[in-house]
Image (cartoon, rainbow over all chains, first blue to last red; front, side, top):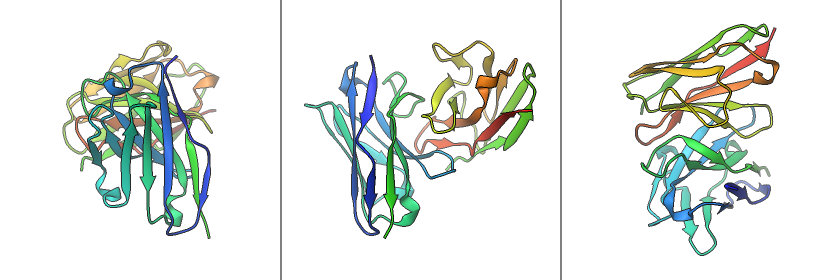
Length: 122
Length: 107
């Protein structure tokens, strides 16, 4: 079945970087855009950016420009999200999410990873 | 950036009640609007996209309407399993943005 499996929880110190992976299966990896969304404890959903697994092009939310890098490895059907210069406010669950049809850069998200908790604490 | 504003922030209703949640965009977004359900500790689940298209497997008591700037999610007969937070999302163009959420509880 179609699924996205993310890497495990991380604990990082302020100023460090974290890299979260999201492995896709059950569909053609390069046919659907992949997004990253985060959710701080008790808060709402926040879009971070998008990667096109086919060509690797990316688009990031302005808030994260300069701190986030999204990449992909087509040989393993995996996308990665790296966030640098971590601060306590980055403590959140990070989700990868696939778009509904692969027909436009921005779309609704029908398949979500299970989430990766990233805790930033000294 | 286009802002999405949901109302109410929370509501409490009885089983069997008709529940309506609204979402307003600060600019027109045509019908590029989705609704998600998130139960506590769980991953968001897509309910509706293109403002009114029901995602496969979602119960028919959920429906969506609207276009432009004003949108509505309706639960025709609230069930205990519908206790969750509901989010709208606009996706006409980047950046994708979400509403702040509406928490639905059973009275």
